[in-house]
Structure formats: C-alpha cells, structure tokens
Image 1: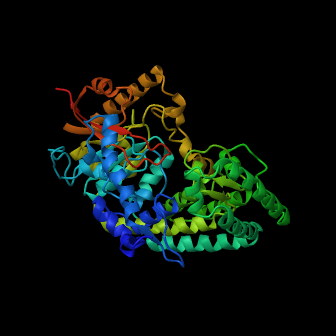
Image 2: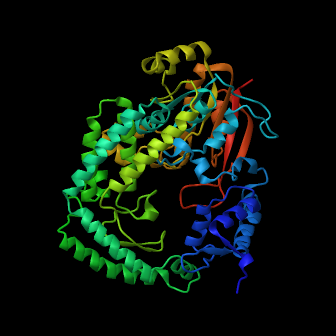
Image 3: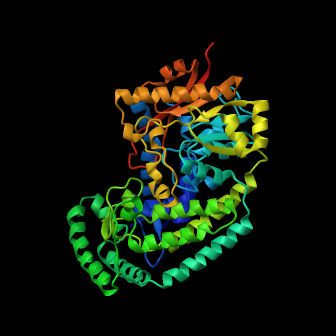
Length: 529
C-alpha cells in the first residue's frame, strides 16, 4: 500500500516534474502519461493520483538517456543547445504558427536564435538587427516572416505553392477583427441551419453514444492500453473481433437513417477522402466564403475551411498526417486504443478552428512590429524580387531597392521527401488553385536517385544565384538542411559561396511516426573570397 506522501495529484505531479526536468511540464502532460499508460493511475471516486516513484522512474529514463543515446547515434558534434528541448509544444507552435498544419516546418525558436541580437558560445556574432531585411526563398508556412516581424525585421518570402503563400500571408496581414467576427458568426449560423435539414447528425449522435458505452466496457482507458502493451491481450485479434461486432451496429444505423455514406463520384481528392455528408457541408461553407467582400477576411476564412477539411477527411486518426486508404465505417484505432468512427459533419471542427484562429491572430496582433512582411508566389530560381514586390507592395519595394536584403534564413526542401503541393491536395481541389508540382525542388515524385540529387543541387544553386542579386555585398545566408547526400558543399561552390560555419542540431519534435534519432545542419554561407 502506497503512503499518502508518495502520491501526487495531477497538478502536484506537474510541479514536481517541472522542477525535476528543469522545463515546463503541464497538468495536460501528466494526464497524457496516465491516459497512455506510461504511469499508473491511482484513485477512485473521481480522484486521480500518480506515484512519485512511477514518475521518477519514467523521467529518469527520459532525462538520462536521450541526449547520450542521440549523441551515440549521431555524433558528439551534436549541438544539444539547439534542440530547444526546454520548450513545450504550445511554445513551439505559439500563436499563428499553428494556424494550419504543414509538413516540414522548423520551430520558431530556431529562427529566433539566428535572427535576434543575442550571442553565446556557439553564436558569437549578431547577423541581423532591427530594420534589416531578411529573405526566405522557400517560405513554406511563413515561420521566418512571423519571427522577423516579432523581432522588428522586414521579411520577404517566396514560395512556388500558391497555398503556402496564402497561409504565410494570412499570418502577417492586417486584419479587420470586427468584420472577421461578423462573417464567422453569419457563416456558422447558416451552417447550423443547413445541417438541421439532414439526417447525419442524429445518426452520428446515436453511433457516438453506442461507441462510448461499448468502449467503456471492452476498451477501458487506460487499462486496455496497459494490458495490450504488456502483451496480456493480443491486441490485433481482440480488436478484430470487436470491429466486426460494431460494424454490424454501424450498418444497422446506416439503414435505419437511410444515410448515404460515400460519394457517387470517386475521381478527385475530395470525392475519395470525404464522406458524402461532410462534402455537402464543405461545399456549402465554401459558397458562403465566396460571397465575403473583404479580401483579407476571405483569405482567413479560406484557411480555416482548409484546416477543417484536413481534420474531416475519411481516414483513421493514426493516418491523418499520411493518408493510407479511405475509411467509411467504424474501425479499431491503434492510436486511441478503442473503436473509433470517421466524421460525418464538419460543424464541431469548423467552430473549433474559427475560435482557435481568431485567438491566435489576436495574440500575434499584440506582438506585431511596424515592419513589412510578404510572401511572393513564384519560382525562387528566376523570380525578379524587386519587380514582383512593386506589384504587391510599392512602399516595401522602394525600401528593398534602397536598402537591399541583408541575408537569407530558410529551410530548403529535402531530396525526395515531401510533395509540397500534394500535402494540401484537398485545398487545391476545392479552391481551384493552379498547381506547380513540376517546379518543386526535391519533390517526392522525383525520388532520391543520383539524377534526382543532382537536379536538386542544381535547383538550390539556381535559387542562391538568383537571390544574391538582391542581397547586400556582405550577406549572411543560413540554410537548414539534412544533408544526407553531402550536396551542400557542391551547392555552395556552384553559387560562388563558401560554407563558413555549420551547426548540427537534434530534431526532437517531429510530427510523423518516426521518433528515432534525427539531426539537421544549419549551413552558414557567405560570398566566396
């Protein structure tokens, strides 16, 4: 029997863990450990406690092994200070950085480290100061633009993807919050009225009620996950039996409500990956957004709808980031350790993301400085930055021509790793954006052959050669890359530059399933002497 002094409630456990690790551990972090069976839940009648010894064992293993294990695998030159492990997920996805999911983005703390005016034993020189102009020719979701704004630095982004440019510009644009609130309230009310005309809400509510009762009996949390982890239950066989039983109930309810689940057409992305009721609601909201007159408001609503679509695709929770196959029935969810269902309505996600987006935009509004930021949609290999900027923001263009760009901070795409258009295929499909897949550097469809590597090196070199025309003479370029093919010395040579320093950092918070030891290098390039 554990003594009372050995037990901590969730809040006490978060305080203890914060002191032990020297980093913030929230009550939600402790709840996660309990729900996923990492530490044992103790208590009855609604009281939840954990054993201090259980926490100690868990965090000792975490604290003592991670850095050493990674250095054993990746080398002693790994700069652990650049891991930023002291930051919680909420800090690495602060305010507008989580406005929309995006594969391959770097955390804002990494950008801050190289753009701000601090020095330490690794960064011994200040490269950018307030009023400077920084360029990100692979802008992605706009992390460099946002952090430059916070630091009082002007910034220009370029991205070949029209959707990426949309996300980036929404984060830094001026906003009429009164109009935004009015449009959100109007569209949400109309969506609710539209949904009342269908049968799928009653169907989904009845199915959810059944699943809740069934899962509590046969997949109790966290007991089931703990038993499965200990191999006391054959998770695969057990899940298969109960999947079949619940599928019978699912089909019974579909028949009872005369519900159409799949779309008739199975040609485009939205035909395949959305269930019929979801598609109808999305099309309805999109029609409302088209009628919004304020262009800036319309862009924000477009991003909210895109984020909603992504969360409402007909796939398992475990496969949300990397789609495997459409799911149109109940299924066993390995991520949650219970039977789950696909979504039949967007209402809850639309409302959640409307609230979340407005909150994030308002938070960032308080931090904004009086500086210029913009993402240009174009090809960084040949874009005339001055000319393109004149069309979008003549005032900023005049400043850039007079002052020139101080340097670059960017994370170029990796060789054959991500299709930057395809990851947002749902948005291109619905909004009718023109795709430029063939102009992507290092796109996944080009794979990782020797020819693909050389094509990649040529592309990055072309970007550097094009962009340096707009830089000051004594420029500083920082490129974040995992150079597994050792291409960056060649890239620097082709661009008449030299690598003057490099920083090797561990990447701890990867969003995909691979949690293994992984590092990237920040290459510091200057004009070749």
